Length: 597
Image 1 (cartoon, one colour):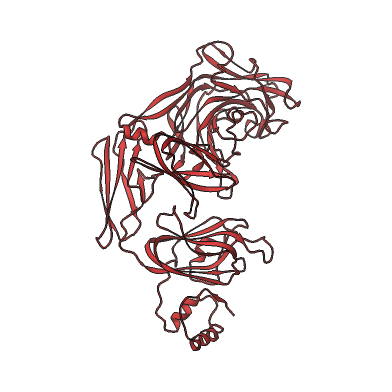
Image 2: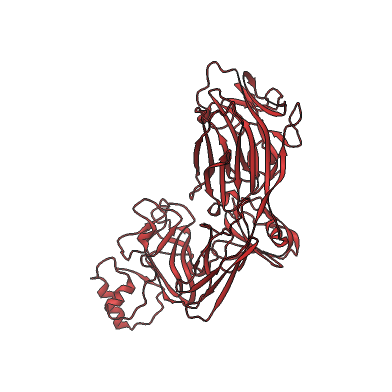
């Protein structure tokens, strides 16, 4: 016998008895509302049926999210066995929603919320439970406009143990079309999503990548698919593209403006190595403390030192030298057969261009690298860790490998390291053939914006990351230069190896600066750090911040501050998760993603 809870419509006792007896003979798989339809009741359409679904995880490949909206009560979505988890339905347009039904499998939620959103960012609770007991949960509420409907589970049932996740046979949504909405649901610029987009933010300053002089193409989607829009493209740079959105019934209009600005690279930090002797200690830090005490990562076979033998400047070039020698590390007391150097820049930055002109060692077993890590990495002995910034474990800090080389010395690789949706380390990588890396100077470079990260050799791009969809590369990074020995990428070391050198002609960092507009510069110099964080966040702005609001993924306000100044500090305590920080001021409305570990 199926159990019905929270039903909010009136049916007389005769009909109730008839319904209950009828259900015993109905085919398993029909929802309660469908059964009422068979009996002649006039019912609203299930808006969720066969719509697009996004889920936090799946237990197995045959338990995917779309099975919770296929109208079949014998199929189901099931999540991984952890908290929290969610399932989000994109209805494809804005509707006036007043009813949600969830048909739980045996692995149900004890605590969860039913949430609505128009933009898939800000969420409003319309129902839920803190003592759920499975079966069928039905929630009726006053009509609310929404395109996205989500079940956000925070506690699974302990019945049968906690080895299962959340499992739903069918997720139903009922309501009527809302034809009066005139908002956008997304903006794409030259095919990439606008990373700072919010449906209720109507003006954007967009700094083009240096060298781009053509007006970008703009494409949009509306919150209500029945709404109409026009796009009036900018005619010049600097220029403004205007989007006018009209609701389906013609009663409402909204105007969105994108101000496009040309830009240039401004050299903000460099070392030309135009001196002789030890490295400039104002610019570089020797990282010598082995993080896992006995040694470095990936089975590497060297100790790093701060000795001149392993790193020095001569003839206008930095020499990072790996040496075969028996060496006892003074920190750990362990002994290895090779030494080298690992350098941290005492400069950190967010977005811009990095250039390193270098010659690489050709000796087998060497593993040269030019790369960056988040300034917030929690790694003993790293420069920024020694200054108190290290509150985030790898790979949540983000890692960008501009150049790595393995046993094949004619190939250069690049990679981006970050967590996957389950928090496990993952990466993307690619490589390019580069001739004579040891005898010829090559420029290894990276261009990094809020939307895209490109890695290149001699200005040939060979690896790209869509940064608009990745929150782990929106924090300050520092540069690392090193030569490792052996390990997972260096491979077998030549038995005749004695020494090898990576030569560096210069290291340069360029940050993007607008060619015009004071207002754009004001928008660009808002910085929030560290991010990710363990709870404490600093915000700096070149314009006065009047209000700061922190939202969780349910859309609830967690923190509000009114700094009325250029500096603010937030303390979110022990609240791991992904949050949205909205910063408001005169002529300023912007949002930032914030990760609390």
